[in-house]
Length: 542
Image 1 (tube, rainbow, N blue to C red):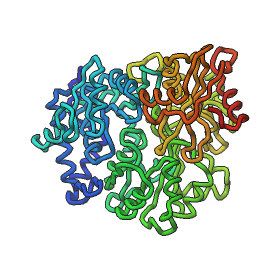
Image 2 (image 1 turned 90 degrees about the vertical axis):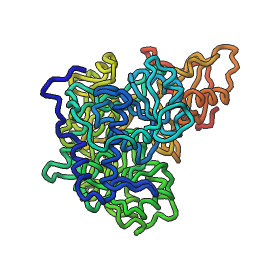
Image 3 (image 1 turned 180 degrees about the vertical axis):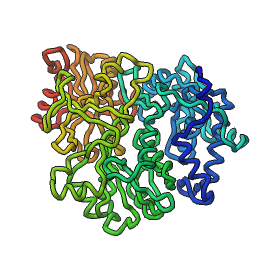
Image 4 (image 1 turned 135 degrees about the vertical axis):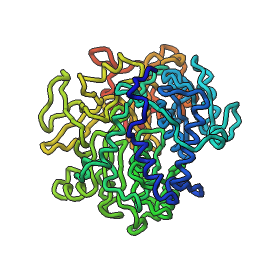
């Protein structure tokens, strides 16, 4: 990478904010996970050691580092260390199967993959399939042949690495997996502007909670934030970063279970957290969840999928006016927010606001576009949600064709359908991209990836995947297969093949065998017709 002479010194970044906090009151807690408790001074020194350990692997500014990590304190520090040395974070979430994970590593051009020991075998398989042959590191001892990054860091200097260049405006610093087609994933690439937004929330004069983000007015001496969603997903990443730039202690939940979450929330005196809807519902349904159970909690953010208005009101009944909503996606990691105080007061005046995901955050614009892509629709007319602002991605990494398809000029096409009311509140009504949101952590099942794989199976002529209503997870995966004449396709065998290649999240709840799939006039599978047929059939087909 060519670096201009004026760009050879470190500018003020989100990391500078974190380190400024960690240089003050060094004995205060910074990172907590069960018995592991790091003070600010310990966290700062470990971060610097990890930065030098990564440099020793031959990494240079601009290189990609794949992070295949579980929720733990060291995972937070490794992500910070990658940015500290000017490298590109490539998040590798755990849900893709072996084929998709290998394609993700390959397309991201990661020079190094850092894995949790729990995922080491899968990481080694993915790295081994890549023609770029990335080096494999583990955060702790593992059975694979790879260096222990923590052991290397323990022998490194505990001073900040010097002469790290400032990322260019067109340079990706963070890349998130956001689906795609089988063997050709889409990777949403963001530049430093994403983190500038978080700094704006910290530095700006007080504004309404709706425009300031999920955790406004945090007190670095008193507030403690729990991250319970995956650190390699947008929600977990932004929750942790916003907590740290405000100087709050960050409590890491390794794995979500309602009883364990309640225990940690109470014992760690957590004041703010973020849940996806199934997590929130499980918490509300737990027998120990009752008024007064969490006296320290001041803010619970819910996002990642549509929330039930009844459940949101239940949160208020149990915990008081603490619930906030947010809307974003990997391509735009912050679009709208609905602060707890605003939601509690405004929804009393207009009950329909419980269905809204709020108004645009600071420096973000929203338009609802018609089918021609150029016409901005008036209030309450449904169209595609288009956004522009600092949280919008640069584009899909190394994929100009699909990037061009996703923008109208500098307006991102979210693929979500919705409308704005006269006061600027956004309401979502459907997902045009056919993403199925399911599982206990509201993860994404990408229909195109699943359909592409199904078409590789013997006897399958056409395939479609739908998200169908599910009481526990909101949606479940259902597949429809058009089979060849005389083919003996076993639904159980199909499900097993899907699980083996794409992972448990993609396992279909039901499989429907048909002679043919309904098609639209332009030759695409008519999923609306399939959904209507499934509904009228009573959902008991197999």
